[in-house]
Image 1 (cartoon, rainbow, N blue to C red):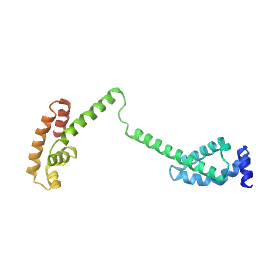
Image 2 (image 1 turned 45 degrees about the vertical axis):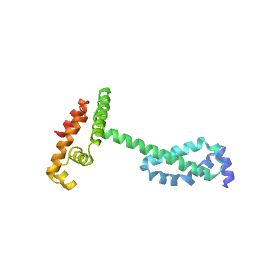
Image 3 (image 1 turned 180 degrees about the horizontal axis):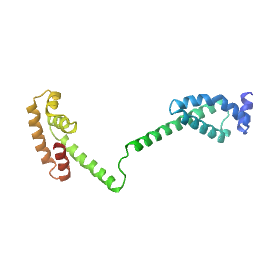
Image 4 (image 1 turned 180 degrees about the vertical axis):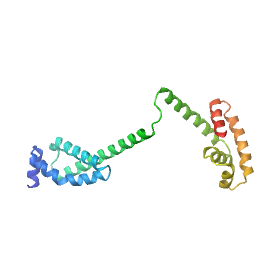
Length: 186
């Protein structure tokens, strides 16, 4: 069937012309989709792309336009499916807490308080900041911190004591932040 006849017949809803286009592109579009999502999803996505093609068949006047439409539609659907699956996997595997208003408020407060502590730590001298970060946020022992920074263990201990004194002074206006800091220390 010549392309002009196929396109005219295709645009007019001729099922043979549609089958011709389907057979021409189906396998390669499925192969393309299977590179992004699993094979079962790929076939469903490609079938949906062909349904969209059929619904919009009047818009196409050559095979290159059809091919571009099929690839673009399939690519977008695959990306959406992939993103959706990642979200489903994330929430399916990691959602331990029931999301309710009190949990949302707790996480909001926690985020705000942690930000306050982070800002206070940023106000420390650089050497103190490193000791605090490695000791309390990375969980290294005094010896591991000393080894990492190439300083003596006594330097680490002294800087921790001085840092905590400064942080207590900075955070004295925020009892919640101070409690959080002390819970990290203890």
